[in-house]
Length: 115
Image (cartoon, rainbow, N blue to C red; front, side, top):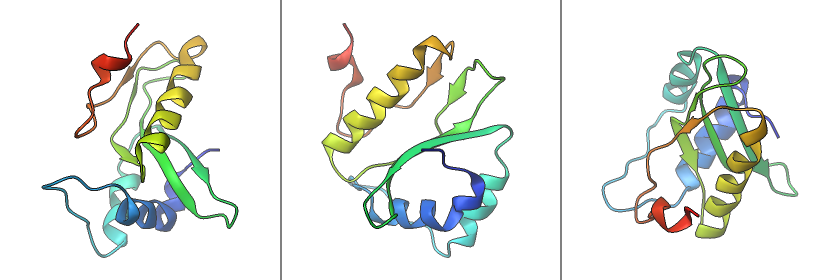
């Protein structure tokens, strides 16, 4: 499902509940996230909601044109399974998007997934 800057409250809640490695921080109040999302030019966002409608995991960032490159600025997931689901979702964009730029998630090596 799509995630847009209008979903800033849900994005903030997902960021607060994400897997947080050593050194991470949570920004309060949620209006900080709202402002940050509104700064994104040509935003794209994709994610998943649970059965109650709560945003559980997502990626979001700017898109340079319809075919990319896409840059992931925000990512939230609660466990490795959700991270892999997001990476699969990004991979499925390969027929539409030229490239996706993502920083390697903490405590995870993307090199292990390269075929």
